[in-house]
Length: 369
Ligand SMILES: Cc1ncc(COP(=O)(O)O)c(C=O)c1O
Image (cartoon, rainbow, N blue to C red; front, top):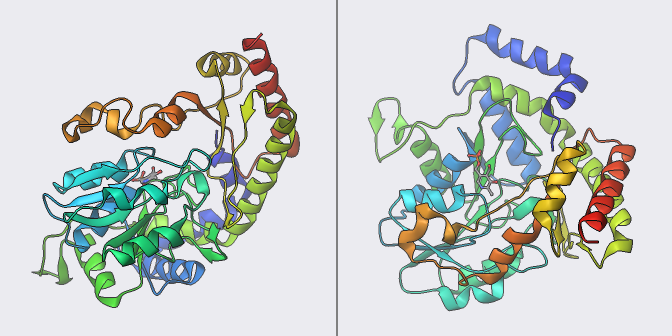
C-alpha cells in the first residue's frame, strides 16, 4: 500500500546525515531540530503557531484539553474515520456526537451539523479524510454562528488546499499525524498542533510538556508528548519534497481514475470537490458488490488493498455506551461495507498504477460474472 523503504532509499544520504547530526548534537528532546521543524511547518501551512508532539492522537487530545473540554461536553464529529478522533473525546469524558458523511467525499456532511448542536456542544471536530479537505468554510460558519470551537483533524491532509488555502488554516486548532505511512511520515510516531491564537498556542505547548510554563513549574494538567529531535530532523528533510510527492500522487490517482472511467457500472471512483486540491492520502473506490471476494482475489494475485474503515465508530464495541446502533448513520455504514483503498504512494510508476488498475477491473468483472 505504501513504500516507506523505497522512499528512504531515494533520499538516504540526506536523511542519514540529518539523523547523524542530531545524534552528534546530544540534543535529543526539544532541541534545535524540533524548533526548526516547527518553524518550517508554520511557514509551510501559513499559520502563526506549529507545536510538535508525540503523535496525531496526542495532538487531538491536547487540542481538546487546551480548549477546556470536560466530562459531559459534546463534540460533534464523524463516525467514518480512524478511531483516534473519537477515542480522545471519550478519554476526556466528553461525548462524541456523530453526523453522517457526504457519500461522495466521505467527509462529514456540513448540512447535518446544526441539528446535532445542543447547549452542551463545545466544539466541532471534522476530519479531512483520505487527503481531501472537508467543506471547512461552511463548517466554520456554523461553528462561528454557534460560538463553538473548531478543531480540524488534519492527520491525513498535510499540503491539501480548500479554496486555495491549506488545510489547518481554518480551525482554532488543527491536529496532524506523522505516522510513517502518512504523506509526510516520520520513522516512528510523531504529531503536531497548529493554532492561530497566541494564548491557545501557549496552552498547547504547555500541556504537551506536563502542563509546565517553565521546567518544574506546572500551571495546569498536562501530558508528556514530545517529538524526538531525530524525527524532527527526518521530517525537515522530507518536508522539502512533500509537494513533489503530492503531485506524484495526483498523477497516480489520475491514472487510476482514467482506467476506471469505462467501468462506472461496477466501480465508483473518488469524487474531487471543485474547491479542493487533495493530496490523495488514500485512493478509495466503492464497489457495488462482492468487495471482500475481490479483495481476496487481488491479494492472491499479489496486489494489496485495504479497507479504511471496516466498522463505523458508532458501531464499535468500545463506544457502545454512547448508544449508537445500526442504521443511525447509514451513509457511513454503507461506505464501510463497500469501500476499497488501492496502493498509493509517491514511489509508484505509471506502469505500476496501470497494472494495478487493470487487475482491479479484471478481478471485479470476474467476481461479478
Ligand atoms: C484521521 C486520523 N486522525 C488521527 C490519527 C492519529 O494519528 P497517530 O497515528 O499519529 O496517533 C490518524 C492516524 O493514524 C488519522 O488517520
